[in-house]
Image 1 (cartoon, one colour):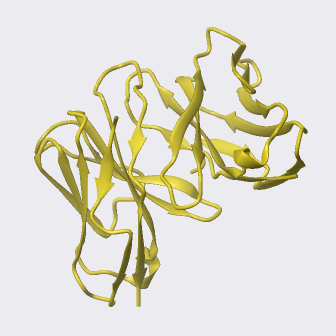
Image 2 (cartoon, each protein chain N blue to C red):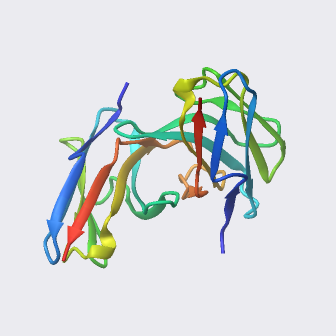
Image 3 (cartoon, rainbow over the protein chains, first blue to last red):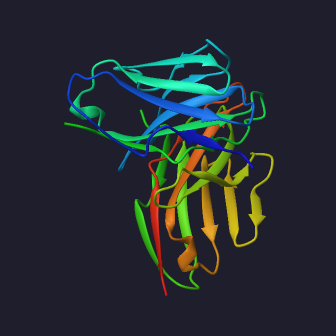
Length: 114
Length: 112
């Protein structure tokens, strides 16, 4: 059974704090993704990684960075949290390939920045 | 820029009715069109997907209709059930990428 886990379901942080969101997948997938989900805006891609230590910017990378030191783990970092980063953050993983494999999502982390 | 436009934003259907959600795209390089279903408190999960070599794909009560010339595709849920109440996202990707472009989502509520 495929599984993507996220370190926290809910997180409250203060403006200016450095925030780490962790994601782990146990499916040996090459691709990993970070999205944010906001009402009326759908899912927007922040960053993705197709291999260890590889990363590519998505549509809204500003204010975020990522780290992928191991294949199964993909971290999203908010260098200095701001109130406009209050959102639901979703991690996903998929096999690498040209056949657009299914993305498997974690349950999400709801982040509130005060 | 919104490359995949989804409508309606919300939908209320009576049990047994047909739910229809529409999506339109602009990028003619898109060649994979999945639909994801998300229940409250859960991450999205793949429901059904289609490639442009067919005009329709059916899996149980769920059907994707695809119109390549109009650059539109839709999800039809036949005999809608309260358990279908969820948020539905259409998405698209092109052949040379594993990235998905998602629509804005449709919140479906099915009442008994």
